[in-house]
Image (cartoon, rainbow, N blue to C red; front, side):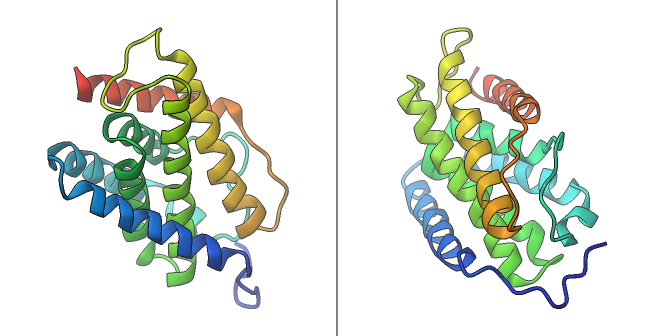
Length: 193
């Protein structure tokens, strides 16, 4: 286990927390005027996945690591595809925050939740820019938007968690990102069809 007692919290994490929590709050505002069924179901699935993730990894102050497949990231990506970038960011940020607040300090929980909320927002816009539409997924037509979604989520989430939070170099694992995007696509296909 890593020694976290004498490690200072990174200064750049505070702006990430502020922006990430603002994005999560904006997602909540965006959700008020829309039906809540899909949001509630995907939120519950994301929270369950977050809670079932290995809790020992949440306490280590180390990079996420190569080959780490996160079921929660797949659910977050499904939420982005089905609900759009802002409500998808709400699902990702809120689920990560609730799951981590009991296992870590509030700063660490808020930072990690912010990383996933910001990654979900970026992934949602990458999906749209790539030609995808929220609430719809057709394969193979939406393959390019799905790849854009996966790359954006990977770079933003791992970039924040590894570069800012861990002080390490960015080591993106495209294999794990492809698997997470694949899970997200399957879940989204079930949700929209």
